[in-house]
Length: 469
Image (cartoon, rainbow, N blue to C red; front, top):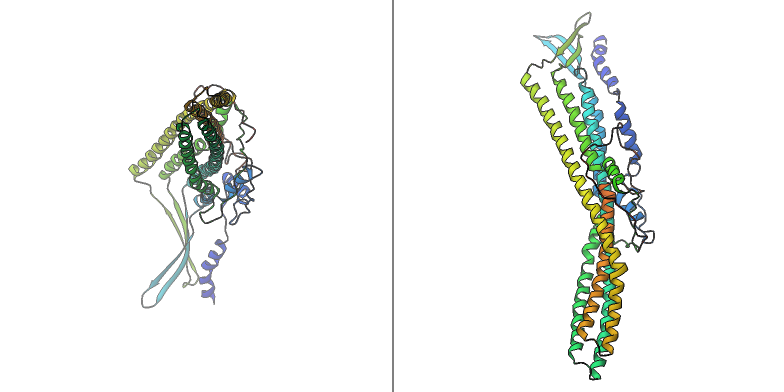
């Protein structure tokens, strides 16, 4: 019985150790709190909002941000990275050992337990690398959220543009039918030849073909909209928003650029990668620190029981290996810094280009809606009255009709293109998430200063979104 109890002691020790827990770092505890704050919205079967067209895009955005596979994949990548912090800061598992001396009979039976202890600071350095990686994964998740919101808005705007184009083309087709009737009446009165009738018919046939092409383009656009919402091909088509909902953007000029440098998830992810590279250098320098192992074995066959303590220490003697590990980490840090600097340059240029495009489209839209379209409509009415009076030929009447239709279509396209650029500025560049986005209110991890990088002088960006459709 005595030998049985002694033999069972290592197993009992293992059972006790199985319930042990490590000591989490402060950053690890904060990361887990942040995951818990977001996790409730990403259940296995999330409660999705009902898609209703009347409220605008808000419920479509909420639906997509919970249902889109890209968002969910990025979220679980972030969760996995946070769990990795616990793995990296934990000590290696203890090892159960067994040794026996056997001649003609069993001379000694020595079960034991061995524990490895990484060198001082190694676990903390490894946890710092994993923590920085989890920050980068969070910003990748934030980027996926913003990209999904942008795709929902972009495809919704394009569907709205298609509907407006179809409406204008159909109105013009009705107008051409009226012009054909007028041409027939003029021909019957002997004022014009039958050529005017044929010209009206040719214009109607051309426009009817364009309408058919536009109607045919609805299916791929609707497929893009469903994909942005995370709906599969076999699922029913969602109802479409009935009004144009603009993207709010309260900041202007340099204030918007400063906010964009602070909030843009691409820049924040690269900054986190730079922090990860810095932590990797500290970890690489710890490779010159030896690791230790301690253990004990007990000869349960001896009387009294004999204990055999064991101790070991690794010998980091390969100096070239250690130097290469440090040099690799330093090169990784320099590469991360260069990527961040390159992204800051590209980001500044993108911001300047999109700001200019927004201002250009705003001026173009004002020109079309306030001057060109009204004047083209007046020109067409004058041409139609002149044609009925026999003062204007049918060719000039058709030219006036085409000009009016072209300006009306350009105005609709400019409005939608401006909304898309505004959404891109707000979501993808400035990083201003929608109100219902499943993101943290503040950045994960410890506070850090705003990104410093190259700046480009920008003209003031005046943002006055339209009220709706």
